[in-house]
Image (cartoon, rainbow, N blue to C red; front, side, top):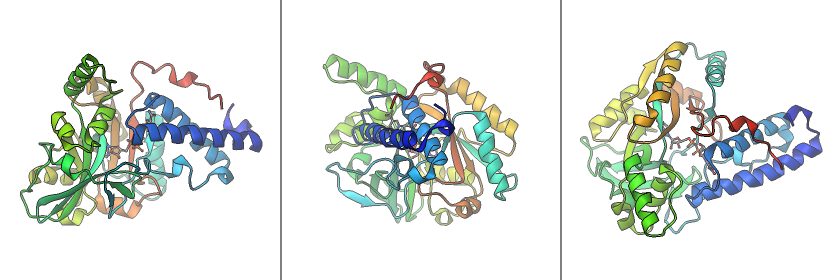
Amino acid sequence: KPVEQLTIEEATHEVKSLSLQVEQWGREYYENDNPSVEDYVYDQAYQRLVSLEKAFPELQSPDSPTQQVGAATISDFAKVEHPNPMLSMGDVFSVAELIEFNDRLQRNGVDHPEYNLELKIDGLAVSLMYENGKFVQGSTRGDGRIGEDITKNLKKIKSIPRTLSQPLTIEVRGECYMPKEAFAKLNEQRELQGLTVFANPRNAAAGSLRQLDPQVTADRELSTFIYYVPDYQTLGVTTQSAALLKLAELGFNVNLNNQVVDSQAEIEAYINEYTKKRNDLEYGIDGIVEKVNDLALQEELGSTVKVPRWEIAYKFPPEEAATIVRDIEWTV
Ligand code: NAD
């Protein structure tokens, strides 16, 4: 039933059961690295909850999964408090919605900004701390405020430099992922050993990194793409595209398939290009990230409790299930 046609009683009931469902899927995904449903099923439920809360704001509680990042860490890892929160990202599922996002920015006074378009790497976010150019600590996102200390595991990943080319004291963030070929091999091996297989490269990466025994991480092939610096002044750059180049110069693995654009036509062309190319890439991507390129403007725009206002993810339609998505009925 469309949300506008619901009575308050119906909406209350649906918000309650949908929140429980989304929370449970969230725990399976974030905490156990073992989702029981495909991402598009989760996304559909999540979007329905967002529209219910929009139509009935009185039903939105601060504990709603729409107001939380990831899941609280309940693992045996030591906890790390992030100096800057690690947020989630807003997402859209069509070019029309992306245009709407850009129009909204424009209405909020951001006049024809330059955007940096990047590939949305399908892995898990990690934060890396460097002191005087030395890698000292790495963590997962957790609930955005408190993550897990996975320093020992991250030290097993070759693409993470132990020492930077300059002695900076800086936090960088990026995505840890498992290349597609390594994922296929790992699952093949696990099947032979009678072990459960990983649902997708994202969960394989997360399951391999969030291991109390760092040797397990060492035995798996994992890599990283670094794309964000909360304190950009330390890096001495003013745009996201320059930050990427600087990060590469410091010794990080950076995905340089990014493109700076300032028109809708270029954005659409980039989306089309990578919708076609995504299967040929050695790593999984689940969409495109559009970021306001000017870092001072990013700072000015800030974020909500959950997502930055200066970036948005365009999610690719699910490959085999593209036609099923619209047919899902929520029987709650
Ligand atoms: P998200 O993963 O969709 O987006 C935010 C993340 O994108 C960032 O934390 C970062 O790690 C990543 N990212 C990749 N490339 C990036 C780039 N170039 N620049 C910036 N960030 C980049 O958001 P989320 O809140 O972590 O999770 C929601 C996603 O997880 C949805 O896709 C959802 O389908 C999936 N999920 C699935 C289930 C399930 O049961 N299947 C459950 C929960 C969540």
